[in-house]
Amino acid sequence: MPVVTRIQLNRSLKSATNYQEWQDAADAYDNYHKLDRWRRTDHSGQFDYISIRARLDRLRRLKAQHDTRGLLFTLNEGIHGNMDGMGRSSLYGHAKRGTKLLIEDYIEEIAHTLDLISEDDSGDISTEEKINFFRRASHCFGHTALMLSGSGSLLFFHVGVARALAQASVLPAVISGSSGGAVVGGILCSHSDEELQDVLQTGYFLDSVRATPEQGKYSIPDAEALHESIATAVPDLSFEQAFEKTGRALNVSIAPAETHQTSRLLNAITSPSVLVRSALRASTAVPGVYPAVTLQALNDHGDPSEYLPSRKWVDGSMSDDLPAKRLARLYGVNHYIVSQTNPHILPFVSDSHRKRSSIGLLENAARRSSREWFNAITLILDKWDKKDGAVTRATSMMRSVVNQDYMGDINILPDYKLINPLSVLAIPSEKHMDGLIKSGERCTWPKLEMIRQQTRISRKLREILQAYEVGTVI
Image 1 (spheres, rainbow, N blue to C red):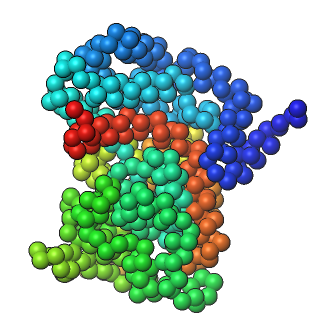
Image 2 (tube, rainbow, N blue to C red):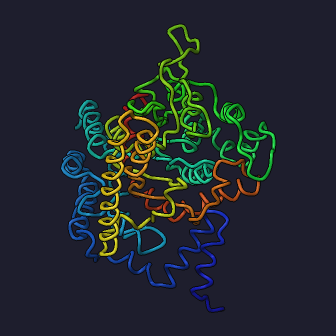
Image 3 (cartoon, one colour):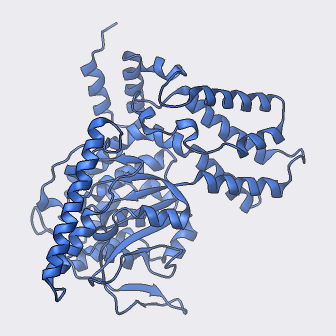
């Protein structure tokens, strides 16, 4: 039997062409480095493994005794994603495939117990009590959102991320996007699950950009051609209609063209009648490249008309690339998956920037200090520009960019950092487009098990509550 080397294992991980190949390579890697033993061993200093083991044993014991009331009581007093520290991202940084089997077993036991309670027909627990429990548990546990950053032509990386999530059946129901990320979000939230199987392919997007005539290697489409591409890719729906069709909540960030206005997050809750296409046109209106956009919405007769006609809007990534706080308020989101491709951010971020290592803490301190100095200097410049002229507009926009948080709980970053600035807004070739989509998939695969485990309970609760709503659970 040939001896497998570390170099060969790493090469197998990088050369995988689908998730199954990547999983096989990851299993071989973990076995070679004896990380499979780490997964099978409960002991860890990163979470309270004794408490989790005790909770798991109790659930299994109550299940064996058919004590549904006891199971309900047990889950009532302890069901959240970071129970005893088991949700720490560092626990997914050891093995390539997943985390401690104890954690995975405990999460799966909770999901199975939730099913058991919902399907119990003994009459010991009333339907009303069950629904109240599931609603309360869902509210307390929270929800996950997928946030797609501003991207320009790098939006096709987001497509690959979305394709990997959809194929693994872990695509969140709450999705936000700005600029290019908004376009991908609009596609995801205006097409059904069945349609997405065909939509998230290179050929679909080639059809969207063929309407734009080629003008050179780094040709930037004009506003009309950009709008035509959006119209080809996204159905003509309002935010409310898109949500009713797919059950996915689209959120689009837009920034005001005027200095003293505030940014907005458009969605089926705050702006149900606004047309998705017009929101995407506004969110992709890069200042200095494309003109600001007036939104369109359906009026009380169902006809398109101007929405806030005195206001014009531009690229949402300028003010709220990742609208975490707004999503938390609107949907109870407390867990964020971020696909980050913002060209001016990528060189300065890494997936480990939230880790509490000594270097990480120093980097965060330096980042905060630099941000405060930048804010102070630009505010002083504003005082010199007493007429709120070009200087004030420029510094206001720069502060909006600098003061944002560009990372989440699970971050999916491209496997490259340096980007040709000439290509950011240019129409990509078929080869480049396909490469970006495959890169998005490849960079998502190592995160899938973490996403699957950390969203398993919230997805199960949502599934059960939806079943009650349609009356399929007695």
